[in-house]
Structure formats: C-alpha cells, structure tokens
Image (cartoon, rainbow, N blue to C red; front, side, top):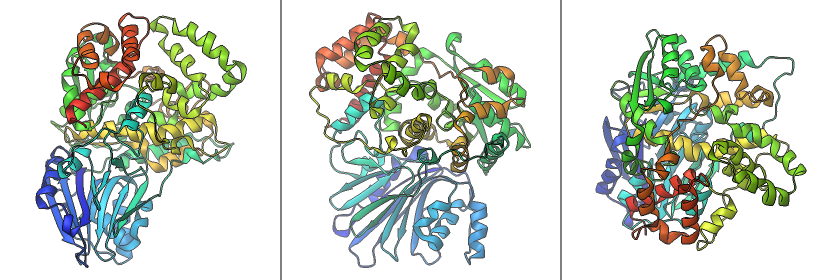
Length: 625
C-alpha cells in the first residue's frame, strides 16, 4: 500500500526533479516508510518520464523499494496495492523462464508485464493502481483494479500527462490555479459524490475502475478489462444445488488470501453482519488472537460498541474499543476534506478516519466488511427497487406527484424511510432513481437550486447500462458496483485509512467471489425481506444469534439535530454569510427555503445541508477559481 505519482511530457517542457519530489511529498501520509524517484528520457529524446513513490511496507520489508526496474533496466514500475495471488503467479513466471531478486509482489507484477504485456492485469487478484514505463516501446502503461479499490487520477496539460494516487499531488506539480468543474457540482447535488470519470477539479479525471491506459507519443488511449458480472451474467448455478457451500468456500478463501502480510494486522469490527463474518473467518486462519478495532460514540444512544464486544468475546480477539464524542467529530472535517481532495460525502467518514488512526498505533493493515452490501444486496433500496415498475404501472405519475408524494412529505421525520421510499419509487427515469436512493436531490430539485448553472454534459451511462433482461435487483447492484462503490465508499475507505497510514483490505470485493455470486439466483441475496440471505445462512451457527438477527444499521451521526441546534449559526454563516461561495453559486431563495424547512422541522434536509456545507468547506480549502 503506497502512493504513486509521476508524468510523461515533452522533454522541452517537462517538470523537473523538484516537481516530482513535491508530488511524492504531498503523498507522504500514504507511505511513511520510504520514498523513491526515477526520471528518464525516451530513446529518441523527445519525451521525459518521471515516476515517484511513497512506501507503506507490508510485503518484503527489506527489498520491496520502488521504483523497481527489470534487470535490463528497460521497464520500470511504481505500484500501489497488493496482489494476493503473487505467489502462484511467481511460480508460473519461473516456469516460463522468469527470475526474481526479491519476495515482493511488485517484482512479480513487473515480470508479469514483461512476459504478458498489458494483458497481465487480467491475471491479477488484488487491489492495484500502477504505472509502468516501457522504454523499449516508449509507452507509459497505467492500470486500476476491477472494482476501483485503489485510486488513480490523471491530468493532461500542454502535451503532458500527470498521474497520482491523490489529486493534491497533481496540484503540487502544476502551475495553474485549479478551477471548479461546474457540471460536477450539479452531479454532486444529485449523488452526494462526483461520479467518475470526473472530479470537482476541472480537467482532473479518474482512470475508470477495471481500466488500462496506454500513453504513446502524446496520445492516451483507455480500454476496459473488467466489468462487474452483475451487469451481464444471469443466474446459472444448478437449480438443484445449494449455493451455500460454494459461497462459504469462496468467502473463506478471499479472507485467507488477504491475511498474507509481513507486518501486524487486524480487522475493523462494527458488530454488524459483514465485519463480524470477516473476523469469524479470520479466526479460522490465525494461530493467535485477531486484533480487532471498534469505534463508537460516548453518547450511549448512538453507540454500537456492545455488539462488537459480543463478537470479540465469541472469537477471543484482542479487542480495542475506541470511543469518540459525537459533538467533537466536526472539528476534524476541514482536515479530512484536505485528505480526500473532495467533500466528505458521509458524516460516518470521520469515525473511519479516527478508528484508522487508533488502529495504526498497533497494526499496519486491517480487513473490513466493506462491499458486502453492494455485492449481496444489503440495503433497504434493494428490496424496494424491484417494486418500482409495478408501483409505476399502478399509480399514475400525476397521482404520485400531486397526491401521494405531498401527503407523505407532510409526515413527521420519524417516517423518514417511508418518505424516502415514496420520493424515489415514483421516479420514472432509472438514471435519476438509482442515484436518488442515497442522493440529496432529484433532477427537478437540483435544477431549481442551481437555476444559474445549466447542465452541459451527459453523465457516464455505464452505471445504468446493465444488459437487457437483467433483473431490477441486478441493475441496482450494477449501479452500486460501478458508481456508488468506486466513487464514494471505496474512495472514502482509501482516503480515510491512508490519511492514518494504514492499509485496508476487503474480502467481499474479491472479483472471484463476485463472479460466483453472480451465478446464484437472486433469492440467494434477497429472499423475501431477508437481505444478504446467503451470508446470513453461511454464518448461522458461527456468529452469535443476535448478530444474525440485527437489521442493517449505519453509523448514526446526529447531524439532523446538530443542524437544528448547536450548529444552526455555523450552517447559516457558511451557506448564507457574506463570504459564502455557496450563496453565490446557487439560487438564494431556493437555498434559503431548504434551510428554513429544515430549521423549522417541517422537512429533514440533513443530506442536502451536509452536502452543501462540505462543498463550501471544500471550496475554501482549495481556493478554486
């Protein structure tokens, strides 16, 4: 786990060694264990390449330094991530004539590229973002893992291509003041994050997950090598066979593969089904107690530490509970916006950073349950989305909009899930409905708030492009796996953990496991009202019964109450004060109306207010033009 940065540019206008150092210095938190740099000219002298690296040493502590080069010096790599099948790949490469000087997965990746070229990415099991300079072919090869667990940002300017694990490293090497991407602001109002490949920085984009980019003689071409199978695969598991044994074997293998490490490691344990399942399976493959870490609020009504402690006792873990004060969370927000190079999408991002910082005192790597909901249908929306077509066929659009929606909108806040359901299930356009389940605004509400910002581009259609004939559940999961996960949850997990210099591994994000699950009937994931059905069955008799019976519970941060109470003036000053960028960006009467509805308790707009407050703090942090 590391940070990478660099460029390829015309020699006469190339950045210099000081710029490369500035880029890697901006990523120091991602790799406090070492720094490396490599600068070289192409054979014809027309182009210059720079590769920079910051190292968090996890595998082969003594000999895994980067940039790493082949023996002939013609191929060089900087790599961020872990390749879990590197041992079997190394043996295969040895049989093909390869030789190795280290025990690192980086050298295996380098040799795999030397033998198989860019197609080597199709053989990798892991999380990765890397850049390879192939001096023989005069190509820079960039790649990112299938689900997008590891980030890679790109910026093309004046014939140069800059890349980095975080945007701040690109800003450190560029000479112009960054500008706010106005279309991305409009997307942000809907999604509460910026869907790829765009960012809030004009001109800075993300290399899409599961993609490889090849730069050659000033031109970058990008192609996809992986697509989540829920977008196209239909159920094919034998009808007379129980998928449970195959699922449990694949999940256990995914957990065991991620326990390969040369440093102390542990697990984040929330007390929910997903992280508890990971801890249970880790315990089967460890000769010593697993280190587990939990975070909860000092305020008992918001804390779930007791559930985590129940699981820790069941498996004899070396447990580290950690309490924070809900009222003290907001002091960390500006700094975390700086780490994320983006607004912090969820209040729960802050506790993730705090538990990462606490865990980093004793371990350098943890396993988590991230991704289970998006692979196994763990959210309430996965129950409701399949009902949308039937609802819309029964309830005319006019009746929904003018009768039912106003009635439900007038209900008190305690009916928030019903309000969300009714607000979303009537949206006819899937491109609007799927983001809106977790988003802030509908298209109509966005256009009213941002009346002075016309939307000028078509959003990426890929998250809505599941093959014809796919079930509504699979269409919703495909959206989650190609948008909500890579552009929000996985980005959040990477930044909040790397801000504390700790690596996070996610067994549920194993592409082999996802491929297997995609062959199951939908009822293996969603059976009646039971979500993640196959996981609950797999953990029966393994996890305590009360953990299995617990409903899905997010990390509840009481921002709704804060915005109406102690943070009321703070919100007003930031969103409507004289120095507010937000006030000048949006339609002021509409913005004021949203805030008044919330403050008076008529509606709960906490998602929107959090979204706007973070956008304001983001603009102040980066002084965008």
